[in-house]
Length: 486
Image (cartoon, rainbow, N blue to C red):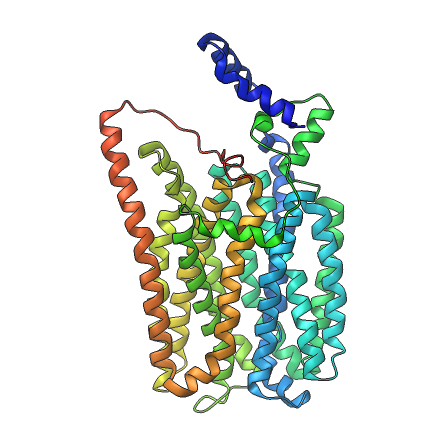
């Protein structure tokens, strides 16, 4: 356990002579790492289960989207209010993530995950038995507030057990499952709601949630690094990260937003937020657009249209994660900069505005449905390829507070998405799909330019420094936990 007394003892090493300091460093190098606690098989089991929970999060959001028109008829509501069921869901996820991130960083991942999943199971029951749009809206905001724990705590769990050089691929696997729900959700939800009604989709969600809850209880241990370090110390084992971690304190969840002002993360927050909002607004409007003239598709056909989108998201996540790990190692060893994970992400982000422009103008002129689908495929591939690298970079820079950092970043993304979803139908009706999505595309381009300039400058400066210094190897390990602890 890292107490204040122990911190003072470690800090006192500054007064040691060179020989004592070298002995101290040699002793540290002989210590086992927290990343060696679990076997590779155990890590893969944990990754598979938390990725399944990420799948559940996206599946719950998308499974009934093909049946939005049926929701409008059954609950006697309007198109705007039906889209509001998605808006409040995203809004609940936006604020709920801040709470779960702070609690899991303080009290551990396992207990917080189980608590939120219990709440989610109950909220799904509320959605199923909703008798009017107002009750349904309340149930949906609760579903969003509870299920967001899977993306916040799930990615923090990955950061707990995978070392930085492997983290991009692990987070890519998580997002591959997350976006796989884009295939399964609409494909199952469309025919299911067509034959058994839109409420039947929540029965599937409930069954899946219970199965994953049981698997989590049986196979996923506590992974929060401070708790693991403390437990190992009580058993007489000191880990390499022993002196890097400090005891977390319970804080106001909104304090997690302080990470948004850090210059090391701020440029990438806009890239992810605008890209995520753009992809989701386009994806959710697809169902509405193809149900109107000149397409007039039924819910079972609309579900099929989401299949190529989901394949693009799956491939984008996997390829983006692999490239981010490769780039991180290359840029760390060559230029000694931490932003190596982000370089492929920025290249992928260029595809997002290209796809948006194709998508918007194809619907504007009522072109064949394959053209807006191609645009949305390009947009989705680019955005999903962006995420693993940037999230890996976040969790490395703020290892001990990874859940809070992820929650703060998700807060911006989800808040922006919920706002845009609330006004998309009105704006599109006023100015049309072409101008609307082109404007969003321009925002994505501007958001990408700033981090590109920053990284290019760092690479150029590091290259000049490396030419004047002997080659050294710098370990890619997050050691900034104490620096950002308040």
